[in-house]
Structures are given as structure tokens and as C-alpha cells.
Amino acid sequence: MSKLYIVPTPIGNLDDITLRAVKTLSEVDLILAEDTRTTSFLLKHLGIEKKLYSHHKFNEHATVEMIAARIAEGQTVALVSDAGTPGISDPGFLLVRTCIAAGIEVETLPGATALIPALVQSGFPCDRFCFEGFLPQKKGRNKRLMQLADESRTMIFYESPFRLVKTLAQFAEVFGPEREVSVSRELTKKFEQTLRGTIQEVMDYFQITEPKGEFVLVVDGKETKKRMSDKEQIESEEE
Image 1 (tube, one colour):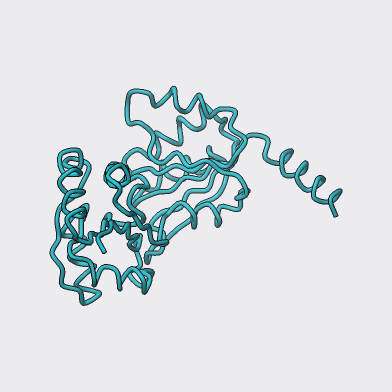
Image 2: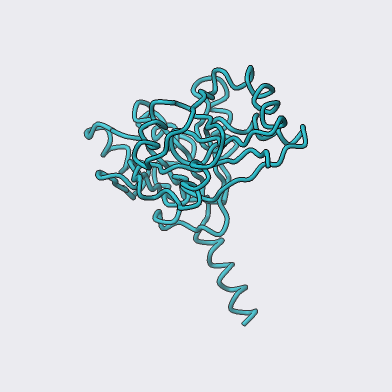
């Protein structure tokens, strides 16, 4: 049966791939890869030989209709990104939307994503949170941060090592230097690290320690202590 499968891949440790993901990648007719070199390495590790087709942010607008047509003709296709779940700060949304509009079944497998482990181990409230992904690099960046200035939910951001210190400085400006933050890097990999403290403390650390790897920044929401106290009081009254 023709179908588009969205298949999460490990964010670092290759052992994190699910048995269902391995089975799906083994059985589909074609695999769409953000970077064919990265996916080839994963497939070799899994002992899978499969035809790969490049599908990334620079060509997805031009290729989604063609891919949807191939699925409609009877092929089964899997979409993977370099790491994590396609569509989450990675290509995927356009293809999923195109397939749905064409009446093509889309099945998304559960699996790895960097934001959830970083959120849970931050120690901040997990009951309500907002995922912002990568902030705009230039235009609209400050405006987006100002819109989040009074956000009471835990906030999650992705960032590269090259913009990390700049981003923390902007966080200090908008959220205040004493706001708590948890910064995780290289999740599931050998040199995984999570640093917790105020925005100022974490920024000071990375000003003297060169940032390396991919980062997930988790920022405590505004007035979290008051919100959690209110929540605990409500739960106590309900009991």
C-alpha cells in the first residue's frame, strides 16, 4: 500500500533507533534523506541497502509534487532527516502537507527528538511548554524574543555553537540575567553535557569555554514559582 512514512532517526547514539524504524526503512521503496551521506552511514550501520533521494530545504519546494505523485502511483516512501524527527526544525512539513492534500496516507513513527530530553532534564516545569526551535538569524529575531518576554511556560530553543553566546546575551536583555536556563549539548553522544544556572552564569561560562556541538536551550518561564504554587494548591484542594 502506497504511503509516506515519517521516520525519526537517532540524534546522536545510533542505538536509539527503534525496531519499527529499522523495519520500515528496510521495507520501503525509497528513502528521502536530508543528507544522503549521513543517512548512508546510518543505513550501513543497520545493514540496510536502499535507494536514497536527496530531500532538503533547498530543493523541497521543487520536488514535493513529484514525490507525492510517485507515492500516488504505488510506491512507499520514507522521509528521514539527519537527526531526530523530520518536520521539527528540519524539512518535512511541506511534503506532509502536499501528501495530505493529495489524499495520500501519512504515517509518523515515534522516536528521537532533542527537545524532550533537554526539557525533562532541565528541572523546569514540563506540564506546559512552548517550542521555538531556531530563532530567526536576523530579521524578526528581536521582535520574536520581545513577544516571549512575558511567556509563563517553559521555553525551548535550538541554537548553533556559533550564535550561542550572542543568543544568551539577548536572553539576558529580554528575560533578565537572573532568569534560570538549562543548556544541553551533544545529547545522547559521548560528550553530552547539561549546564544549569542563571542566564548570566551560563553566558559567563561559554564566554571562556568555546561552545562545541549542537545546543538545546531551555528557559524557565516567567513567574514559574507562583504558577507551580497555584497548581499545587489546586491539586491539594481537589484531593
